[in-house]
Amino acid sequence: MAELPVSPAIPIALSAQALRVVRSGQEVLKDVSFRIAQGEVHALLGGNGAGKSTTLLTFLGFLAPASGSVQVRGRDVSEDIRAARQAIAYLPEAAALYGHLNAYENLRYFLSLARMDTQRPALDAALDRVALQAEAREMRMQTYSKGMRQKVAIAMAILREAPILLLDEPTSGLDPAAIDDFNRLVRELAEAGRTILLVTHDVYGACHVADRIDLLHKGELVGTFDRPPGMDRIDTEAVHAAFATHAAA
Image 1 (spheres, one colour):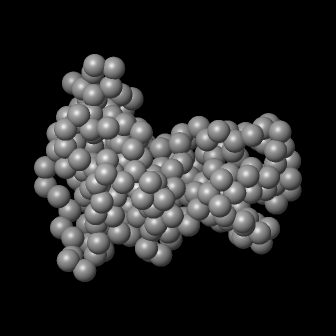
Image 2: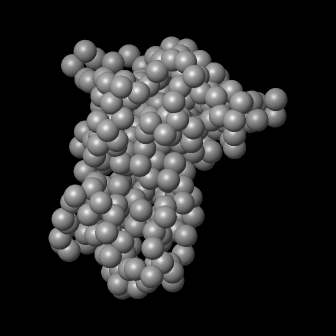
């Protein structure tokens, strides 16, 4: 699989080399290799069971490779899980937020676990960036829609100030306008130097936000698509055609 050309001046934030992962006796990832430069938005696109979430969990050290390796900022995750996790903010598809707490209380609690004492202005700034209505911020989370909960989770990932964001189906539950807002936010974060690896089955969204897409099918990388220089997105038709071809196989 061809890899993204990277200038020697740009550090590699994430890399997988000949990665093979086995779960419950099943080979979930098969010889997967890629690398992601600092400040890049990289999407792993694939259907259910493709191995997308498994890839994220391996970078976080929750799953160990059967063979091959994953590195975070040049350090093998298996050799220093703590350093890898300190560099990463992870947003799962269904963030476990507390329904009896409001948005501010959830953010303060979870950030305190990372030993961060974040004040109200910073919380509001992050919630502004994800366009959560001001009047909703002091309402209990149990009254929130799935999309509103997802916005709070995205704000939390921003506030963590980690150099690398791992996002698992980050636009799940968001309406089209909110998805557009999210895509703009991701590009802003990348331009500020953060590295973003997102996994998704949304072809349209991936093409509009990513610098590179790797198509994952049944644990194997079966296609790579780059955003052409000077263009604002990857060719949606080409990616959709490849996605559909493998989905039908």
